[in-house]
Length: 558
Image 1 (spheres, helix red, strand yellow):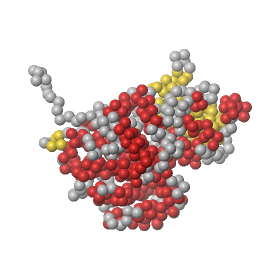
Image 2 (cartoon, rainbow, N blue to C red):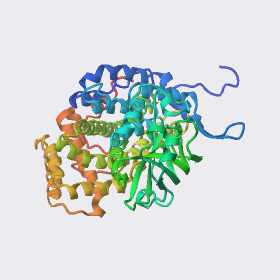
Image 3 (cartoon, rainbow, N blue to C red):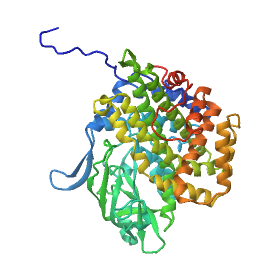
Image 4 (tube, helix red, strand yellow):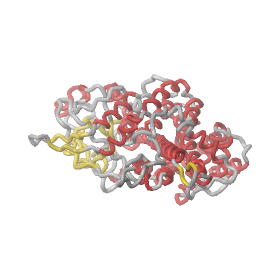
């Protein structure tokens, strides 16, 4: 050692990476196969290998270290409102679009398309999350666009394309298109009925001059949006009032008009967000922007709900993906880091914490893939009713569990987890957004109440799902019997809506694990979530839990 060397670096942890994100996740593979997506496994293995490479994972660091920049004007003073992204962002978008993460359930390319896509989405969620936002909105726009076949005929071929095309051009001159959303305003937030943005029908001659043969249903919009997601997208679904007095209508507002000129959507600024920093979110004003009526006049909320159910599914899947990413990083660290004479992963209390996190992650994955199967069968009445309940309930509970999960995983690394050199700080910042976006926790729980209030058969569909796991586990039998009894006597109680949503998700997760997971996983989940009052910090698994087996399953290689 040289005279003034102060120390030697040892007891370090090798970089996380160069592993197959799908191949090292037995719970995800099993869920894909049992929910109907066995035909997608080969492709998922290839994707998992690609996403698990160190150079792919590093794209997330670069895209978040170099946030998008708004360029309002060109060098000659012309307004352009273009968003400048780091090359890492474009590389991530190429991966997502090339894998069909935005389109595969709609193009008929595979059976169980929603399940297969859900698995891909969870895998991408372990890499980078800001790039998932425009992909989710594009994916979810398809059911809404199909309500107006004339617009669908023009836009869907571009939306379903596997080519990522970021060029600022009219859609007819592009190889692929992305869709964003503009719902909320300053005065309303979730209360979109208070929106003041106004839309007036264009004079037929004006409409033809702007849109040519595609002039039907053309409107001009004046107003603003407080959150306008992905302003670089080729079009946005926007809610606005009309003079008809029928209520809010939905409009497809393109970024560029057919002649190549900018539509009058003026980006005021980009949001300075806690997380999701690789993605551009903005505030905009409509200074006479042109758009097309989507769906029926006055049915804007119903139209947009076609989109919202799918974006809420992605909130569940996205949270499951981030939790899986946080778990694998924490477990990898604990296996390689020594403290007090042995690996952290060999310390009993640390094993308890990590195993508890592993249970939460596997349950979220199982729930997400089961919910995706509901979306694969929209014409099945039972599956549709189940989706109607589980989508808002799952978005509430799984997304709500995310921030605490991320904080616990970060603590495994100690101070090293709190700094930006690693992944955990970024993952932690990403987790709250899925609880907030597309309806906060209270909005979701009130939606659960509406589902049961409007359709008593929803309780029967849930009971049928829970009954499949049988009554062999006494704690599960007791918990589900109490839940089914309460729903049979259902009365909407807003003050208890959060507890109800939590109970529903825990019951479904427990039933899935009892049916499909190893006994040491299912019994530990039931004992820690159903047999005792849930909540509190992670690391509360009861004595006798086989933590070592749970962790070996959670990440077989590291």
